Length: 261
Image (cartoon, helix red, strand yellow):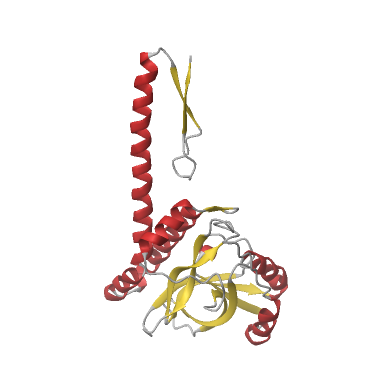
């Protein structure tokens, strides 16, 4: 599979900018890697959510967490039939002085399969804050990277083996789950118990994917220990020393074993 179709967001952004730039600030909604990798200047960040969406690993990645020949997966917003579904994230307030540079970099970062749209963001605050119109990167269903699947076994297998220029796909999943736990834990005091449970229920597939990956890693480590023990016994019988070369348990690199006299 060789796609390498990358989007130029300039036209989309110019249309949104004219509408959403108010009082010299514009807001960006982050729900994926923008939760933990914030490599741009912002004046304020606000916790909250968008309604009528779900967060799914339905976007293929050939530029960050995979390659054209070994696609990874990243999350995108998916429109939900349930108006009460919520995707929690962060709205970043970006001043007009930094806007052009910030979005030029973000357009390149989010070039693979993403489009731009306006979403309504609801701040999770003790005070009564008005909804905010935000710029958001999402995957249009018509683009060739959009790959919907409810099969968590398939998705976890793809995440487990994929690596791209930005790192392993596993690392992306771990960072996302960690960021969500931190985000939801901070907001727990502002949620009713039933609402908080619903949020975790809606995101449960992400945490299940994390668990499936961790089980695969544990199985890999058990297999390696068993292999090491077998090699060590063989080495001792021949008065050799066993060398363990390049053991990286949290990568896709299989460890090498060799003997040295």
